[in-house]
Length: 391
Ligand code: PMP
Image (cartoon, rainbow, N blue to C red; front, side, top):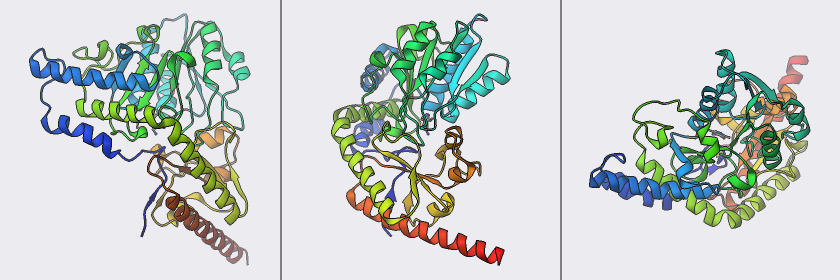
């Protein structure tokens, strides 16, 4: 059975070129990057070269790039770190309704501890933050606003540059989780105007368990560490750096920058072919989210009358996602789709396809064939079940 992987927004496969660059560090590198001996200094130089590559992914400064254990940690550091560094004059933290759980849950926790007054910024039916809605919520008592660059479930892009201007008009901090956008489309920290940007290695075909918080100098000054210890990473993230992880993340970032433009056009072509063929093969197919403003690799599709878990389970070795991968296993419908005004039924019947670097035209053919037959099968079963129950 041919396996097809269409869950790149969940995690991308490690690029063999990245692995090749990691191998010498995995097999031969010794020394703690913060030790002063020659071995340590060599490791530190290796980490700094990787740091430069990660910074370049978003046009950031090498010295303002803090390695973390992933975007989850970067998001925790940005939100909790900013709140702990803040003062009583700015108790409010605004987070969009479609943020990743690591932003939403951190915000919720800060609220539950009485450390911040957290408010959720609603999104439009298209899945993005409307600047006019944010403007009505802003005020001089806002400490931080967190709005992601691109949503992991729908791929929908937020107007982040406009949002940054609004946030800065109140001298508040703008945190942007660019985990899904960086590497797939150009994202520049200066042009965007973000103060703090979260990134993750495994979303760009690098290793898992490594990420970064890239900031402006101003942004990082307004953050306190949440992990205390030996004062690594500018004092913002203690703990010996994961050297192979950093090297792999750096290599993945460099490759993404080099190939981003050509690759995103290729992947968008495959994604559009997938959607067109599904629409041709299955009735009542609808795409969730504003398709005029989204990542090139993502499609979130509602198959009316086709329970998504059942469809996915019947797609025989084609990996797709239903709801958020990070909270799969739960039976709750996607909070992102609900926040966009979708009904619970629509949310339960929606499947995310996310393509990437190693997706081929052959993969799309297989995926279409299996998806069309899975939707047909699930719909038949449901109708049969319903008519049996009724009759
Ligand atoms: N933010 C977004 C937008 C994500 O999609 C993810 C991964 N699902 C994360 C943060 C968490 O990343 P990590 O796995 O590196 O902790």
